[in-house]
Length: 143
Image (tube, rainbow, N blue to C red):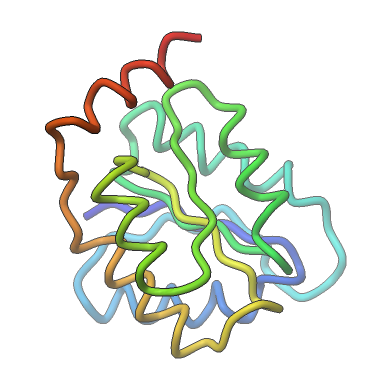
């Protein structure tokens, strides 16, 4: 799977761990930055990652920050992106199964790195349930 990855300074350490985790599992990772824990502005990094998912250049995206909220807000401004903030395995699974999320947002200050890696795995492996959820996804896209 082709995965867009981006973070600000507050998510940098987890981004690097997730990048290694994904590559070890054979995924093609496109890293949109940042490249250090120096303070930076997340919209400049997250938006291009979200645009790559929306354009079909990447199959999924993972964005990170301190809480993951600003990153999700940025990604969700891109038409065709459905970015969900996850805080545990269940929320990561429902993001895919019920919401067909194509971008996952995680907060480095909110969760342990081991939990983040497990959430990434659930996000990538959980299929969209379709059915009754499809109508709602179409409604989201009717902006």
